[in-house]
Length: 144
Image (cartoon, rainbow, N blue to C red):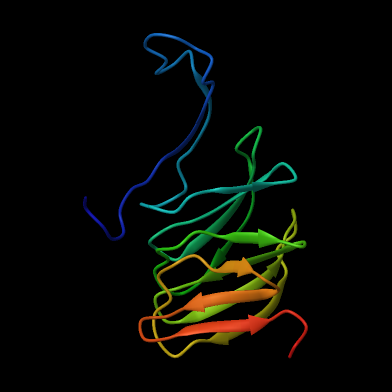
């Protein structure tokens, strides 16, 4: 597949339709996104998805109407993690952003992991696992 920045499209379709659903199955279409291989996260009626241009988009999952975008300032290859009211995302510069999940954009914290973070962050066993190009980090949620 072709990677990198470019025109992107995000569609919401009605999967109960049959046959050619090009028009009849379309619920909404969002064309402000750039090319992406990320999986969208949908929590509390909000859809979060990043793109290769480094923009994180927050949309209404039912209507496709945008609430906000956040510029990561570097390409994003992974997907968002939404847990405990927070959204986590890493980028190609190694930056991790922690945001409040919701209709209003609010950055809670940022940190750099030393090299590119291409994968999605994973929560497990009371820790947040983050891998960059060289290392795997296990951050404790209680600070220990």
